[in-house]
Length: 131
Ligand SMILES: [Zn+2]
Image (tube, rainbow, N blue to C red; front, top):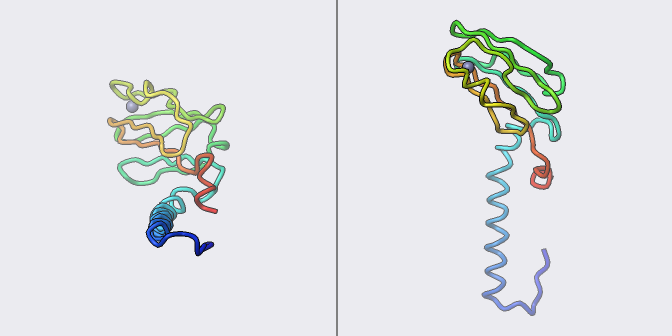
């Protein structure tokens, strides 16, 4: 960081505050990103039932997988970088109707089956923060 003698003290203080705030924000965000984005450019599908992890796979390798939980069965299918529940025998079909997800942090929930399908990984641009 450069400190120019031409800067007035109050401006310098403001700059320091700004830098400290930026660093604090960076430190606050970094563990969150590290925990959720083990690979910077790969999306991972995490499937949980009743809060327990059932399955974890790269979105690119996911294909079509069927899960059974709480007396219901659903099939999730990945295509073109997105993931959707293609079929389910749950009442309501909310998980099917919720459509495709394609970005980190998005999820599909099937309440009757207690299944949560989540995409984790970094979205484009997050590398600026982690670097
Ligand atoms: Zn459902």
